[in-house]
Length: 265
Image (cartoon, rainbow, N blue to C red; front, side, top):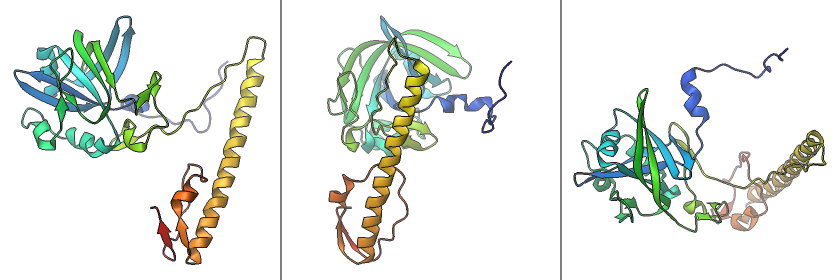
């Protein structure tokens, strides 16, 4: 016998399946054919193989980029940083068939090492690929790209993973849906029970520990925000930069900042 669905369970249309998979880094796909280069934002990508390294990208069949990749047999993935936020969204509204996107947005590029598709400056990482397989699936084309070269900005990517301690300007953009993006904020380290430990007990204790730490952080943050509120109401100068290190992340309660002078943003 199976348990009934939980009370908070809700049905959604099958078309939202792709939205549930969102959250990975958005990429700018570049390719070149007949001397013309093109670029488009893409969130539908996935590793397909590690040996050999193959990456799959799904491009809508009606897109000009799909035709270019078919003919060129190659593409590059550029991982834009935070400063490219508005560029990424705008590029999705342009057609490379009618306009030179690189010229329109004044995107600076540099030469790749194994293909001809240009690489975009100011990104967090770059992957060069040669197409090895193509599949028409529904309204999209799945291109399997053999990875031929990888380049990274060490300020954004280090020790085999994204650098979560990087400055906000050096973090990759993660597509959530629509015109909403996110950035990696902090690392959460998981603990796996050892062989002699009861997994259900260890995991329960770990969850309780995490909840307690979160509760303490929220209380400390609320206390600091309360101090800030009182200082502003008194008309005192508040150095936000000095206070920011003591305030944990989370949703800010509304603050009336009209009665004080604030330094440091």
